Structure formats: C-alpha cells, structure tokens
Image (cartoon, rainbow, N blue to C red; front, side, top):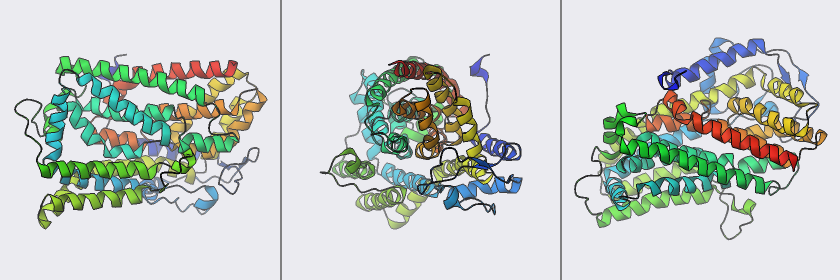
Length: 488
C-alpha cells in the first residue's frame, strides 16, 4: 500500500466522524461505573454495571459546546463532580485567539521579520544546527513540566524560522510538536503526568527515573535524526516537501514571501525593544507554569498560572507592544482582531477534539473500557504483562488525551495489577506515559496536534504520512526498554 497516495478528509471532518462513532459506541458498549474516592479516582474492584445512557445525535452535536465550557451534558444520571470534572477547552481556545492577536501586533512592527531573516542568515551553512537546538529546548519543557498546549504560542515563529532557513512549514511543525512530544513521552519529573501517576501508584516521583531518562535520550536522538533527514531532503530539493504545493502561500504567510535573499535590514532600537518585550512574555509564561516547589526549588516562587493568566499576559503585552510601536488605537485594535481571526479555525478544532471525551463520559462507557483493560491483563507473566499494558494504553490515550486525566482514571486500577506478576509500579507508570506520549504525537482528539497542524497548514493525512516511520521506531524502542525493565 502506498501511503503517499492516501488522502484523508480535513481535521474537522475527522473529528466529527469520531464524535459520531463514539456516540454509536454508547449504544453498543455496556454502561458501567467504578466507585470513586475523594480525589475522583476509581476504586479497584468496585466496577458495576449501570443503567445505559446512550447518546442521541443531538447530544453528540452538543458535545463540542459542552467540551468548550467544561461541563458534562444533561444526562440526568450523574453530576460532573461525581464522575470526575472535565476541564473545558474555552481557556485554551481563548488563549489561542489572543496569541493570534499578539503575534499579529508584533509582526506589524517588522521586528520579527527582520529577526527571522537575521537568524536564518546567521546560521548560513549551519542551518542544520537549528533543528537539534530547538528540539532539545522543547524536549526539556516536555520532560520537566509537560509542555504541550503552551507550544501553540511558538509555532508561527518557529515555522517562519524554518522556512527562512530553506526548509518547509512541516519541518517547523515537526520541530515543536516532536520536540515537546518526545519530551512528554520520556517525562522524567513532569508533575502533570509522571507525578500524578506516581502518586496514584504510591511511589516517589524519582522511582524509575533512570529508565525514563534512557528512553528520553534515545527517543530524542531518533526524533532529531528523523526531522533533520527530512529537512535536508527538502532543502536540497524543494519538490520533495510534503507541503510543496503550499510553498508560495506559506512563504507569504509566515515570512512575507521575502525568503532569505537580498540585503538584511538592521533592527532599529525600537524593534529591539519590541523583541525584548516579545521574549519577556514567553519567559514569564514558562516560569509561571513550572511547579518549582514540587521540584524542590524554593528560590523561584511557584505561581501556578494556567491559561486564564496566560491569556491575560499576552493580551497585556500585545497592548504594550502596540503602544510602544506607536500604533494608533484603530490600527492596534484592527491588527489584533485580524490576527485572532487567523486562529479561529484552531480554536474550533480544540473544541471538537474535547467533544470525544464528553460523549464517552455522558454515555457512561469510559469506566467500562477501563474494566475491559483490567480483565485483559490478569494472569500474564511480567514481560507480556508490561507490553500488553503498553498496548492497552494506546487506545486509552486516544480516547483520553489528557495525560493527567488518564493517570487519574487508570493508575489506581493498573498499578496494583503489577504486584501479581512482579512488575514494579514505576514500570507501569513508564508504560502509561510512553503510550500516552506516543499516541499524542498523532492523536486527532488531542487539541495540540490538531491545533499545531492547523497553524502550520499541514493536512492531517500529510502529517500521518510524514510521521509513521518514526512512530514505529519509537514504539520498538519503548517495547524494548519496557521488556528489559521487566527482566531486571
């Protein structure tokens, strides 16, 4: 089968089809529930059937709205707090819109265009170095604090740098998405994935750290080699680009069609200040989201900011940059609104991606799927057990793209099973986070994937054609490491 000839429908169509399929599933899969503890985690051994609550088509179309607001539909059966609160997508969607406005205002000053061309020419002859440097930086964010949604703010800038360096938009998307994604796959001290899972497994965060570091380093090296190999092929032959048909449009959109030729204008003093403000906004976002206290660092305060604060932060800096650049009130407002409009499609995709979980929860089939996974693992030896655990977590990660939500839902059930086969709880945590990280590199129910592809104007089918060899290599690496961990 020639994968290069497979054409998939748009991201919107794919997500709508998935919503319909899951809705049909609520009519077929038996409803059931686990009893919950005070933290909302399921209690092992308490699964019981529940009166079915199949979802009607009208409720399926309501799911994106419910997912946007962070509520479960009116099932008349169970409250969101009894079943586990579903965080809404409205904060992420609004953040994306404001980021669009912030970037548009900054771009209007000309500072970013000039800086991008300067960076590209500064690395002339060494453009290859941009890819490993950037991927390592994003991987550090992924492995330490689960950098995912936050990366949506970086795509336009990184894509522009990659195009200016002679690569394509797909390379830019891959640098950010694979860099941060592999970092999350190999989470070391990520409190939102490894931390939560370790807590429910009853082990310290540092247990199993060595194996996770090995997975992180090898997986990142494989990812960097994979992206660099594709990027160099595109640079040597632009027609080899999987998005070659969009080349002129992407150059115009991301770098104004200027490319890297011609004289490079010097940054003015005002543009240097604009870039400093631009960088300061991102620095504040990164510092404010990291739980420094959980990492044992007390010198830096833990702010605990999330998307509400992020949105306000970038709105503030958009206004400050616009005023400093002496934009008129009307010009600033129009520029911001037009920039936000460019990201409207991304915001809609985020709402659609969240709807899958809404339908499953409303249909009361999430716990049933978890119970089936529990049953499939009983009676296996250590090596088959941990690999079947990894395989089971793949579809679970597809249905529950939130790493913290997946850990909360499954780890209280999965972790105790390992004691029956001699598998350490830390290895189960590693299997969970590896599967979740791997699936979330392509997961259409994961807002970051669909949002990133929408920003980069990369069709979902094109992304699958690009990444499938890497997925196979990463899966083989994870299976090998888990098997060795079970034997040690």
